[in-house]
Structure formats: C-alpha cells, structure tokens
Image (cartoon, rainbow, N blue to C red; front, side):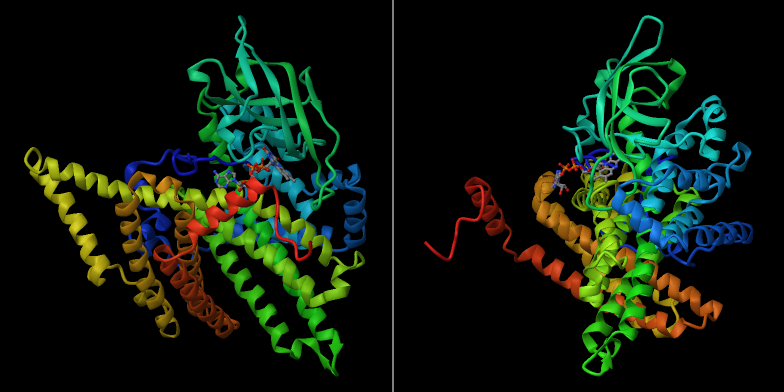
Amino acid sequence: MSSNSNPGTETTATAQSATEEDEYTSPAKALFRGEIIQSALWPFPQLSSEQTETLGMVVESVDRFLADKQDEFREWDQAGAQPEDFIDELRELGLFGLIIPEEYGGIGLSNAGYSRVLQQSSRHDSSASLTIGAHSSIGMKGLLLFGTDAQKRHYLPRLATGELIAAYCLTEPGSGSDAASIQAKAVKDANGDWLLNGEKIWITNGGIADFFTVFARTDSGGGKLSAFIVEREFPGVSIGQKEDKLGIRASSTTTVSFDNVKIPPENLLGEEGKGFKMAMAILNNGRTGLGGGAVGGMKSCIALASKQAVERKQFGHSISEFGLIKQKIAQITVDCFAAESAVWMIGHYIDSGYADYSIEAAISKVFASEAMCRAANEALQIAAGSGYMKELPYERIFRDSRILTIFEGTSEILRLFIALSGIRDAGRLLQELGAAAEDIFNNPIKGFGLMTDYAGRRITNMTSLGQERIVGAVPDELRDDALVFEKYTLEFGRMTDVLLRRHGKTIVDRQFALQRSADVAIDLFVGLCVLSRVSTMADDGIEQYRQAIEIAHMFSQQAKRRINRSLRAMLRNEDESAKALSDFICEAGGYPWDTYG
Ligand SMILES: Cc1cc2nc3c(=O)[nH]c(=O)nc-3n(C[C@H](O)[C@H](O)[C@H](O)COP(=O)(O)OP(=O)(O)OC[C@H]3O[C@@H](n4cnc5c(N)ncnc54)[C@H](O)[C@@H]3O)c2cc1C
C-alpha cells in the first residue's frame, strides 16, 4: 500500500521480468511516444466460458450472502469491527481462496474475474470487501508471485480456506510513500535464521491475520530490502490496538511489531535484496482488486442515487427531472463505465501474461479511485440532508471511499510514476538516438536504423503519416471519437518530446508538468479502453448499445477539453506563483489574512 517516493526512477517490477521489447509494447507507454498500439486494445477482452461460469456462481453467492446485511454493516461500522462469525462465513464461502489455484484448494479465478468479485462485494460493503481484498490482492500475493513450490504447498491450502488470513506489511512510522526508506531490519544469525526487528503501521487485517508478508532491510547486499513470510505464532510478533478511523471502520487496521522474531531461512520470500521490486510488483498486480472495488462502489452509488432522484419530490416534481440532478447521475455513470473498462482491460493484461502493465495498472487505480470519490460525493449531494444522516448508507460510502486515493500508492505518487515511466520510455529512444549518431560510423546499419526509426516517429508526430489508425476498428458512430484520440495522442507525443528537450533529466523535479502529463495519459488510455469496449458491444448487439455510444461521446468530449487544458498549461501556467505562495504559507504556518483587526 505504499509506493516509491521517486516513482519512475526505479524500475517497477512485474511478475515476469520485462524485456526491452516488452517494455515497448506497453500501450500506455506508447502514448507518450505518440503511438496507439491498437492490437493491445482491440478487441475488448472477454473471459473464457469456463471462467464466466465459475465467476457467475461466485458473484451470485457473494450477492446472496451480503445483500441482506445492510443493518449489520451499519452496526459494525459504528462498532469498528466485524464479528468473528462473519469472518467464518467468509471462510465458508471460499472468499479467501478466490485467486489461489485449484490444486491448492482455491477457486483459481483469473485476475479479471477476481476484480469482478470484489466489485460485487463492494456494492454491499467496503469493509467486507477489504477484508477479502487485502488478503488476496496484497497479503498473500507475494507468495503466489514469488514463492517456492515448498512455500506454496506449506501455506496456500490454509490460506485458501481462510484458516490463515494474510496481511501485507510495508508501511512504517517514518516510511509511507517513500517505501524504500523502511527501517525494519532482518539480520542473519549463525544458524542461518533471520532475526527481525521493527514496527509496521496501519496494516489492513492486522488484527485477524496469521500470515504476514513483511518487508525489511537485510544486512547483506548493501542493506537492500527483502521480503519474509512471518507467522503470527512466531515468538516476538505482537499486534497493536485497532485504529479508530474515518472510513472502512469495520476493517481491521493495526500496528504489527516484531521484536527479535526468529524467521527460518525457508521463509525468505523470493531473492534476498529484491524486496523493493517485489513490494511494487505485488501492488501493481493487486491494483485490479482495488479498481474492481471502486467500480462496485460506483454502481452502488448509481443505484442509490437514481432511486432517490426518482422518489424524492420537490417543487412538485421528482428531482430526477431537474437538469442539475440529471447531470450528476449521467456523470457518475460515464465515470463508472470508463473505470470499469480500464480495470477490466488491466485484468486482461495481467491474465494474458503481459510483462509490463505497471503504468496501465497505476492509471486504472488513479482513475477508478478518484471517480469513486466523486461518485460518493455526488450521490450524497443528490440525497442531500437524508444523505448526511447515518440511517442511510450514503455517508458511510462517502467516508469509506476516501481511503481509495491514499492506500496502495497515493494519487500523487502514482501520477508521478505514470508520467516518469512514460517519459523515460520515450526519452530512452532519444538517448538511443544520441548514441546512434555516434554509432553511424562504427555500426552504420544499427545507427541509420535508429535514426530512420526516430525520423519516422518525428514525421508521424508532425503529420500523422504512418500513425496506426484506430478509426478502422470502431463502428461508424464512434469515428469522430476515434479521431479525437488519434489527434491528441500525436499531440501528446509532441509534448513529451518538448518536455524532454526542454528539461532533460531535471524533468524528475517538474512535478506540475509531470502531473499534467499523467493526466493526459490517463484520459487517453481510459478513453481508448472505452472505445474498444463500446466497439465490441456493437458486435455483440447488446441492447444498451445506443446509451453506451452516448457514454463514449461524453467521455471523448470531456477528455478532449481536459487534455487541451493540460497541454495549454504545459506552456502557460501559474506554477511559479503557486510554489512561491505555498512556501510563504508553510513559512507563515497558516493563513495570515483576516478580515478584521
Ligand atoms: C486505512 C489504511 C490501511 C492501510 N493498509 C496498509 C497495509 O495493509 N499495508 C501497508 O503496508 N500499508 C498500509 N497503509 C499505508 C498506506 O499505504 C500509506 O498511508 C500510503 O502509502 C501513504 O503513506 P503516508 O500515509 O505515510 O503518506 P506520506 O507518504 O507521508 O504522504 C503525505 C502526502 O504527501 C504526498 N507525497 C509524498 N511523497 C511525495 C512526493 N515525492 N511528491 C509529491 N507528493 C508526495 C502524498 O501523496 C500525500 O499526499 C494503510 C493506510 C491506511 C490509512
């Protein structure tokens, strides 16, 4: 749930290590080069019929189990805990084994399928969803991705039944976003055991977990981070009091402390010294869980808000007849559809073995979590006074949604990561170009080859000649929308070139520009996912197709306006004034202007 403070300057690892070539096929990174990789976006992915059937059964049982528990969820929110009986029922339903392969006793859902289940549970309650999600998305994901066969045989069957519940321990009092700075330390003793000391804070499932994936600095390998499997039963592990929180109150959040905890050598997870990359890889891989949860929350906001809007009468009319209410409901729907399309696409990238999906996963997390926060706010506004009262679920949904842009990487850190990774990728081509210019005499074939590639890209960026066209992949109704994304992808490629030329390596410190760059990438990638999805709906003849076309039009037009604003602000802005004002206020320690005295 933490992320790196210098995102983009470290390679974010993925389950399979990315080869150079793989990196160039990342569709979101390609956008920074002014390219759309159509084959990575069309056709919109679908599950196999076997997965669809299993998923259908799981979704239905989640619904049946959670649908009539609204009163309990409200009580548990106030009490700040879920009762043990409820956790037992989650166990019985198999919800702790969702992504564990069947050979270890799990249900073996794909990443996309898992995300869909969390979507369903989140429609009912975020805390319930988080208890399941923190276990699978991050708590034991390290074991699935990096564990040895022996480790998997030892732990996975008990993790699948929920006999063991898992938690992910990265954050410390002095180390939040800056995950690389953690201080927990593991030292190898003469017998080869590790002695672990340190304190982890705000650990989801801390109070109910028996299996912890813990990150600590090891003394060998230059004090780099390593990951360990630690059992609650190991002497020296202690769990703090549950935290009293704003939202997701029934989900367990505690400190977890390690005082000379002896860890056997076989509980080192993955390679020693590779802990940071593993920590990031787990978060990347787990992002579809959180994304699915956000989409589920939005669907619940849409259901609540539309019912409320029809039933509530003011000025002699249902408030659903008023333009300002219509606007809110339509916007939440567009955001939900867009987030769902992106989250589903990323699930597919992971399931089909893409080596590098880190930017795409970050984009889906930022977009879905922020869209959910807006949806919760607008749904409450539609319900107004009733929404503010604890009797209805709006205020709980509003409080619960607030965590989404904070944990598993804050929106700020992820935006920096998205922009820096994309710009670095584009910049690598420029660097190669520099080297190629020198190389022309030593290795003319390679040198001229690269020069020609680059020249080709410049020509494409300037004229659109040679650009991969997506207009051919969309139905006629979406032609204009496709042209928007083609045009602005080219403009974005040009802008990335300008940024690189203007700032070089110092781009790392240009956070205002990086944020704008990330925002454009988010709009382009999410918009392309929407177009791909709606194109596929046309093939399927789905009845809500016409409305989906309207959603695609709305998203494209809104994205176009946002992108235009961001691109313009790259050149003309108030960044320096904002920095100076912030420095002044921080120095003053507050707002120094009062209207009296
Ligand atoms: C309810 C809850 C559950 C959690 N569960 C877990 C868990 O299970 N496991 C776990 O390990 N952790 C967990 N966390 C921790 C969570 O991941 C961190 O809170 C998160 O990574 C942010 O760290 P921080 O809160 O220390 O914020 P900080 O890192 O102190 O950041 C403060 C602000 O500064 C911004 N910022 C920081 N660095 C930069 C920068 N370089 N440039 C620009 N802006 C920057 C941030 O975006 C943020 O807005 C949980 C937290 C909460 C609240």
